[in-house]
Amino acid sequence: MHQQAIDKAKAAPTHFDMQESFVRQLDARITHHLSQLSPAPARLIDAASDAMGSGKRLRPYLLHLVAGDVADRDAVLDMAVALEMVHTASLIVDDLPSMDNAMLRRGRPTTHARFGEATAILTAIGLLNHAISIANGVAGLADGQRGALVSILSGVMGWQGLVAGQELDLHGFSDRDGVDDGPLDRITRINALKTGALLCAAVEAGAILGGRPDAERSLLRRFGEDLGQAFQIADDLIDMLSDSAATGKDCRKDVGKETYLAVYGAEEALRRCRGLLASADAALVGAGLSPEPFRCMIDAIFTPMLDRVPQAQAASAAR
Ligand code: GRG
Image (cartoon, rainbow, N blue to C red):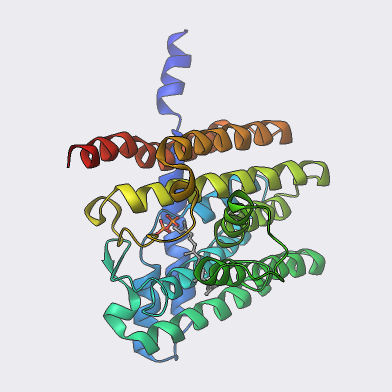
């Protein structure tokens, strides 16, 4: 390679640098939006800031990648904050004593452990409400686009999204729920609702903000769905085979649940997870998006998760 080209390649930001710089911008925007909550009670704002303080920021970054360079950056950041607020609210609720009763999340005490159950519930409701308000206030969009973003958010948090997925995860299906084709069907449905829906929402919002053509949308949706299924299987593997020192959250919370891992075992779960990631990749390529930054993101998130599986299996076999 010509020396000039080598120097240029060295100077070019890596995907990791780009992710770092996006997360810095996102965190600044989160701080900005949390500052808008005042004069709400300071304790509630403290709880929201604490809960929103970290995390992998997977959904915001996904939105940013799908939106691409052409989109209005402030609109992308605002919608990314709104998605992260919905995600964080769902984690607060998931951790409550009546649900997973978890004490550790994102390497810190859960919101109810630190601020009490009542404040945790109010914080989650407040974050959901603020997320809608942020989406509704995204500047520089046609009314139709803004309406679509609000409807994506309200849809994903509710009766066809997280709330439904959590209810089915906790209490299972009734014979009126229309899913009775065995464990794979039930597991796939729960994972789609409780995990895939929010990843799909990030992808769809990114497609709207990036002005992606309709022809790309169904493949992008399949990308989000496959990624969601793969992500939940990886999360289940980690929950069962890792520990809170490595994950920053309470583990073994899925004991007794009908997960892919519980029904089919770790080897098969690993195989399916990798298969879903390959299918997600094919959908992305089919949609015509440059796959490299997505591959980097997926690699950064999944490799540390999946690499732990054989070690953890070996350790548990040795016990
Ligand atoms: C309050 C909207 C709302 C819903 C209530 C509790 C509930 C219904 C839904 C929760 C569903 C849930 C916890 C699904 C699991 C999704 C998942 C794998 C979360 C972990 O995501 P990461 O690893 O977390 O991206 P970080 O902390 O990195 O952001």
